Length: 231
View (cartoon, rainbow, N blue to C red):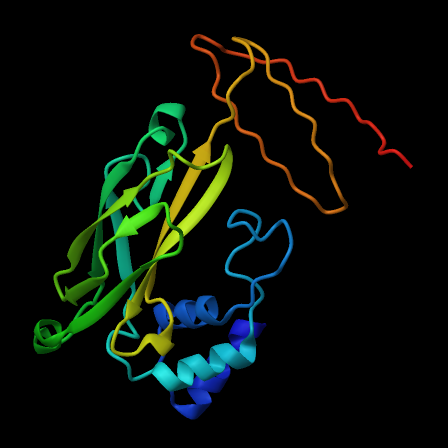
């Protein structure tokens, strides 16, 4: 219903849009929902804001590359659309990945427009354990940059960060592309075959625990004990 409302208004006002520009406007104007679910895994960008998404679409319809999706591809490792580190040997040391950004033009797009295409991009890492360059010139053929993820000092658990790709000449557009980075830092077992932990929950809390299984392990017994808090 919200998308239908936006598309109807765009058509009525004669404002250009594509699926890529719609997705970008919705993501860049969504309002994150606070709470334990707002950790990069329990929800997406947040709660859709129709008024802000409309404003974004109207203001930036003529911006360079606004109608184009920018494809993200990561070389090496498990993920192609992002960086994913999960095993103990991967999270003990820094990992380097090559990220390629490529604008995707529709069929029949004017060749002169392709050749003239150029975007000055600013790269922003959301967390200190992510390192990358700061600037990139994106042309019609795409370009690459290297990212180094160092999870060695992270606490055990799930960690989520991003590299946000901005138009450095017009940062108010918000990110034009995002490179998701997920690190699963496993908890160390207290003996070769045993691990235990006490977790205190409040209503709506989420808790995630990731274990590095001993070599050769094929199954596990899980025992849960519910204890009431002292009055």
